[in-house]
Image 1 (cartoon, rainbow, N blue to C red):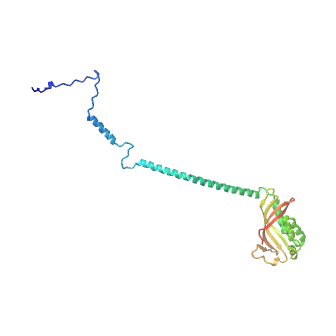
Image 2 (image 1 turned 180 degrees about the vertical axis):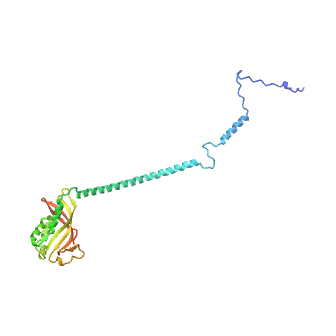
Image 3 (image 1 turned 180 degrees about the horizontal axis):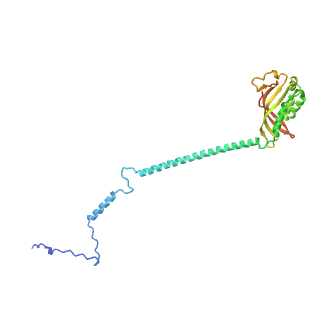
Length: 266
């Protein structure tokens, strides 16, 4: 016999849920695969995975900030390398400059010491007066007092120079010629310059500037040699510019001419 259809009254009714606090807490509902919540969570996870992070870079586009930093780093390294290479060159140039300055200072110091040796703060004034009187006596001659003139010449000389003059002024030399033409000679000193003096100031080298004047019976009749530094004076003498260098030394307390060099020979 077929069963009769169930009426609403005959269907089983749901058991009412217990109220909160009245009993044990209800256990969580089991999740059903494919539920709406899981679909939403899966969609959110997919969206987060697809979203670019802060460090992700779009495909196909060069990282500008990184490229800039890389370029800046390369430029800094290049500048550092250039500076490292330039540093030895700068140090070498500075060293060469220091050495050059030291050489200049050494040369200047040596020149100053030499100048101070040749030009001390105080020079014995008798050096200048002895040079002046010595050259005047050496070049003076008067035919009226020939022997006295020769003696005075030899008195201001010493050493080999004196021996040479004594020989040249002997009989048959230039003195005989001076006597024949009634010659007189003199040296007019214009200035005396000190070249060198030793520490003890008993030896010095000087330069004497002046005019050598010769007068005889025929000097007024002869013109001065062409190209020479000589002129004929009003009284018939010949005056010639003559510069001499002399080394004078002290011998027994007196200054003597030890060496003599003509710097101009008019």
